[in-house]
Length: 125
Image (cartoon, rainbow, N blue to C red):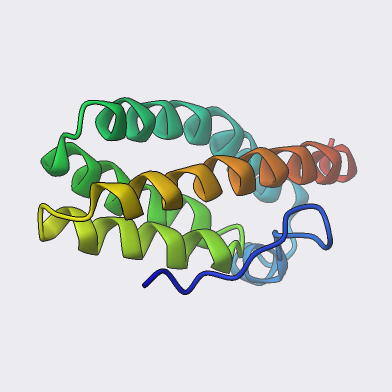
C-alpha cells in the first residue's frame, strides 16, 4: 500500500535550511545549486516519465535513485520518500500501477518545488 500523504499547494514542499547550512549561507553557492536543480530536475523527471511509460523497471530504478540526491539537497522530503518507494517497486519489477500512481505525485510535487525554487532564487541574484 502506498503511504505517501501529500496535498500539493497547501504548504511549501522545499526546505532550504540544509542547503543554506551546507553552503555556509554563501549566496553565490546557493544560487549555483539552485540553478543546477532547476536545470537537472526537469530532465531527470522526463527520463523517469519515459521509463514509467515504457514499463522499464531498470531505468525507473536508475533514474529515481539518481533524483534522490538532487531533491534531498533542497529539503524536499516528500519527494525523497516517493522516489525511494518507486525505486523499491522497480527493484521488484512489479507493481507498475503503484509506480504510475507515485509518478503522478512525483510530477505534481516537482512542479510545485520548481515554482517555489524559482521564487526563492530571486533572493540569491
